[in-house]
Image (cartoon, rainbow, N blue to C red):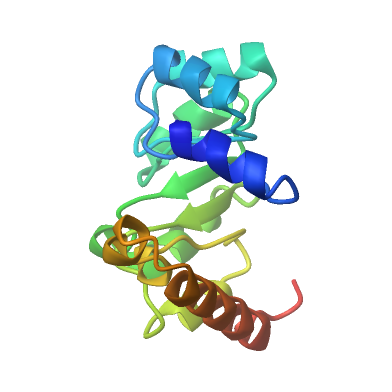
Length: 165
């Protein structure tokens, strides 16, 4: 959470969220640090409820029809689809979107520039996450030049491969 606060302080124009949030206590810490949304690898009703209490959007992980139904029962219509590639990738999202036409997916896990365009073409995909854009070594080394370059490349790629839908 200290990073969230630093990013918000330096770049107040960015929408910053907290990832891999596993408990209500972590929700509190993330929101206190300035997180505008919370992402979880799985569906935790306690995390979703705490986010709702604080008025912060929650994007819990859901990769099965059962998990998606449980998310809908909690008022969630956008879920993190993680781990995307090992859970069936675009084909799985396409299959799940049929019985859940109002659900949007944020796939992460195993996505890079080699398969990103496939996800971007799927109408049920709201956004895509991937660590290819921000290598851990660049973050640890505070290599701002490389991070800016990778983010710019990713933005350019997304703009070039995102259909209007």
